[in-house]
Length: 408
Ligand SMILES: Cc1ncc(COP(=O)(O)O)c(C=O)c1O
Image (cartoon, rainbow, N blue to C red; front, side, top):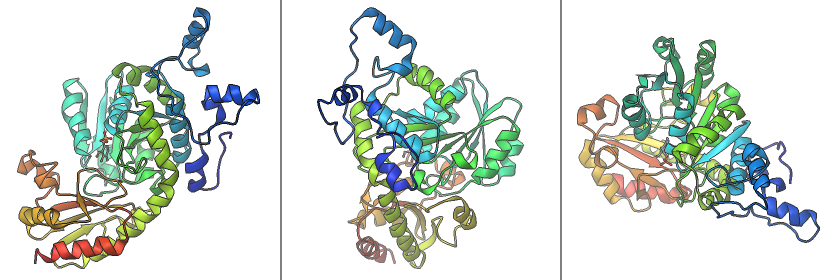
């Protein structure tokens, strides 16, 4: 099957990227009329590729587009995954990585190859915040963190040496949104690269590239694979940037995805559109239920009219996603009590799984973060984050009902 444009995400998620030319052995045999080809993309679980002569190997090294040499440089299973995700994001190219953090660090190292300043959203996934605030700062890269829900604050923080505007929308865990088209316009006026972590929204819930954003990142550990079995990431964008990242930071810092993890992710993506629809449907029902519960102080879900940026979510997103954050009235003790009492909602720090996962940052992911820092960044003691899964929504709500009931 050749790579072509499809009318809908469901078809794209199943068929896009799986061109015969991605799989060299299959192509040769198939063309010779000796065999059919595997219906599923094969897994090329090998570190290297053999050549018939030194000159063949040398020409492959010079013209890398023509073939595979060594899996850290590229592999057919990785490539099939990259082609599929590029199609889903409406982008020229993609580069799969060993983890979401592998994608984030590889993209930042590529865009900051000759230094520069970063303007970043102040509420970011904790490891991304640490990477910018500690690791890259130690390497001489300065970051100014701003409340990017107001695009004017981004513009005010831009300096002559600003190279990157780094965003998340919705953010983890507070589900704040950024006006992506407005940020892209500001960045273009100043010739700055925009990068967004689109993990929460997925390509089904939000397509930043048509809105003008340059680079999109995902932790494929989450919704894209959806199986809770892999750690993986991806960088999506313009071919020049992807080539630079592949031949430079990815290859030399080495955050390369294994063929097996690429293959497992490829198996997950075809059901993403269907899963995402159900995650959204279940999450909206659960969010509406939580909003009425007397033990809950507030609920953040972009699909609820009470979300401070609900209008932006409606204009910018194609689905509000499966992530909900709530503030419990009783603080840390009730947060701990809630996660201890839940039975179907499982205490685990990841998201995007078929199961409903719950996490209480103050007693888990942010336990070691000083309380004043937590409060500054809105990680309050009563904050609980849900990744709503694909169970029957009545069962999720019944589980919440029995556990929340004990807090009153
Ligand atoms: C929004 C977001 N980005 C990136 C990451 C990092 O992904 P990984 O764990 O695959 O490195 C996470 C992990 O939870 C995340 O929530």
